[in-house]
Image (cartoon, rainbow, N blue to C red; front, side):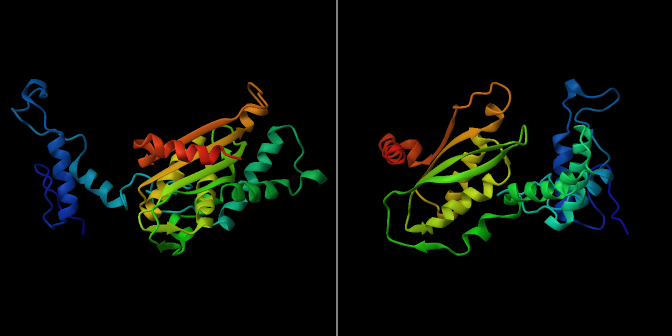
Length: 273
């Protein structure tokens, strides 16, 4: 039996404290001051944007309430759901690639293209495999207590990603530095963190920050610095077609942002041959 809701104050006669609290907060936020009250409403009248029962049912259906419940591909540090399995995605993706080939004026049934839709679908899933990975899985316990507080730098980590604006690759290298606070991270895990976020549809600016935030979450260091240098095929193959252009982005957190000498030391190490 569905809970009965009092339309005046949003309280539930059957009692669901958490949901009722959300209803009350919504009602409070919708309070209209006398100067803007609707015609016929008394001073301080409550006017809700939605029927309380309707809103309550929406809350019940929201699950974890982060607004991404129906997303297929969103899986990030702040989200707790993953996309469908790769096997489940392949048939629909292959059909889409087949339609794309036809739209280009090609014959999807000619010998060279018969298996292309399936190959392309598998390739795209591999290019975006980071959606199936999360920080905890990649770390796999490789965080160690160590009395070390000097800078750790791993530079020139190869990176391949997909531009989310044109679905073409961009690639380059990533350099990461951090100042430990009695915890260090297995060195290969820094490269794996790069893989988590680069193997998604991306923009380089967001990728840089995501890597820095992930290292911070992994070992809570005094600071993290990340520099990414990328070549974007959307600039090389199309548009302005500037073959030699490179994009450099950086994120500095903690002491790397606050202390110019620490930041300079990191940048000197990254730029040294």
